Length: 162
Image (cartoon, rainbow, N blue to C red):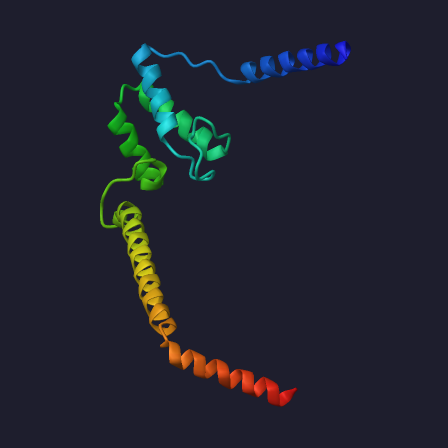
């Protein structure tokens, strides 16, 4: 058991060192540029991976986007300029917060419309259940003499069959 634990620890350290060494060290002119680069790579979506940002993706297009983002940040461009460049090249999809325009209006309205529709369906179902309960209680409110007459008819039919 002790050898298993030591070998597991050894492989874990080896794997962590390999993963750390595989990441390229990037030098920035200022900490602000480094923070901007990190923020942009977290905000930009990989077009191939769909729901993964370019910081976490290893797809070829994500690597290209990271390199271009780095290049633009090192040129001194601000966040809006880099985002505008990426949107013009890859479309609004690459930004996790799409703008409100005629093409993305459905994305912004759909959650509210779905919530409204759900509330409407719940209200209609509740209304239908209440009206169904009223109808059932009206049907069950048969006068006592009619019930006795029906019961007598059923008993008579049963006796004839026996």
